Image 1 (tube, rainbow, N blue to C red):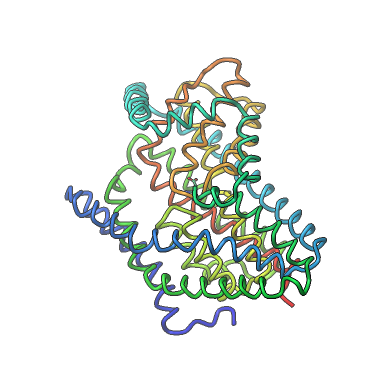
Image 2: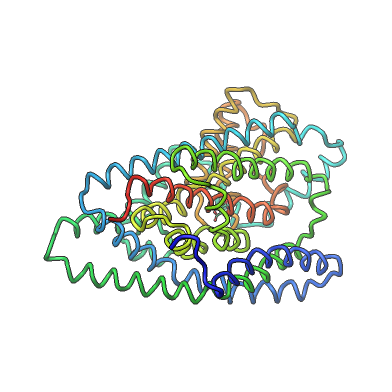
Length: 436
Ligand code: ASP
């Protein structure tokens, strides 16, 4: 029953929130004392204890959940309605998030308030950082091919020539599409597919049970990961020259998480969104600690269906798709980061260019994978589009390096908002697709 927790579950749920707070304090102490060896050990232990076990389960879980969810919908026209409503919800909430980010950063102007010395130091170290990150340079080469190429890449991912290769490469989007097609076909097959459905449903139940075991480790894993992330950079960054930029990102995320999304949930889904948020705390804590929507997905599905009281049908459709496509926090972050970088380079963007930022930040968020720093990589799409609309390269893409150093903390915050957006969608769509 929703909201009814046993003593053990309560310990896991409360422990994961406490782990975040204690993890931050311990991380800061480790940073101040220069204990980078311990920080490294925490990071390895957190990865082995929490991230890898969750990642191990996530792809088979996506596959079985989506097939089971779609077959349980039965009638393909119901799937059509659910698909349309979910896509509209995802797109609408991401556009709102990107607009909020672009408005806040324009109003506050964190890139204009810095001294020329600070700007010179930031740009120099930023470009150096960027050049030292070969993965980013490769992403730039891909992203600079323009918006058409970005759409094409998403379309290719959605229609993989080989779903098993997509799975092996850890690209969930293609697998979700494959699972949807298979689910519809199985639903239409009727009795002939009964045993296949039973096998997939059984596998799904078994995987969710395994997720329950991993959830025992969430408090410890979250503590280790948060302590290591904070230990690496230290909270002092929040007071440095990038402090105002970080404050705008975090402020925007807070408004989106605690005002806009709850309002949307309340209007479209009813009930008390904050009670729902509290029930979802294990997933939110996991998102914050791992900075990965994909790694969090097993926990998201489990808590939505148990404490959250969302229908299985809505959860199994919205959560896997959301973890891959719906990223409100990333859309907001990309908008703030790009406008901030233009400000640092002395460019005040007009309304038209801000509209380009909002549209491309949403596309960049859709295209970002649910893994750490993915949003940083797809930011190049936004920078390239704004430069094109300005008619010259006012901001070199290498300037992205300026925000790399403080990315992890912001990534933890935006991933939490990403996952909260997915859970909200599952809650709202439960109205449309209740379990019978
Ligand atoms: N880490 C984010 C996520 O997994 C994506 C991003 O980098 O913005 O949701």
